[in-house]
Image 1 (cartoon, rainbow, N blue to C red):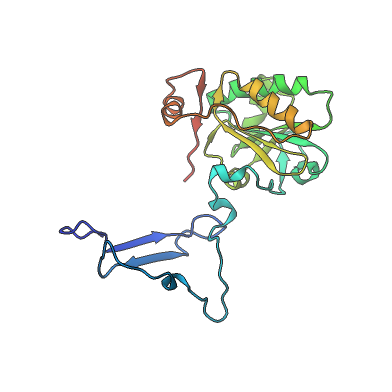
Image 2: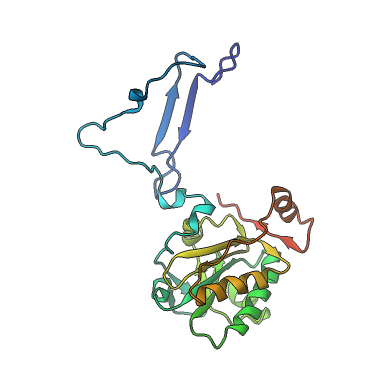
Length: 248
């Protein structure tokens, strides 16, 4: 609600329950302004707020899934277990302390995912004899009956984990496909990239090589601009683009 004469907001209502496992609509916030002073003198003591009895002060008001994508680098990989499309299960927590992990999120309907997976396959072949790194592809919210034929046609021999309900993608803030995530041997996420781009294979190879050498990977020299991301999503650039993933 905005005052039509002054152009200043008078009331704000927001649903802040998104993320952290809270049900939509379970946490509503309404702020009402009764008057505006655009340049008041405010003493520092105004912000010295003591929590009421039974409560404690918190500097962070966010669940794990409220984090932005950039916050993921440096965070711990969620200890999840997913089904494999060929049967059995894969415990992602089992890699911690022993192996680096490369995750590639994809879907059969995602055209750029095919190009990204081709690069992942070639890279996995290069590191095939190195037991310190594991490559896993993660299909997003599709049944095994859809995934298995696609896997066979693409001659994909890498493990395919099924994120059937999108829970892992939600925790890792996967907003577009393909998305590639690299987790170090210490279980910490060290790299995240959205979209397919020419030359990505060499960039990812350097990230993995640095991790296996005990070095923290350097940030990529170039990150996609807003204009580049728009071209990817409008399919205007076949060398660098991604598919938008929207879930309702």
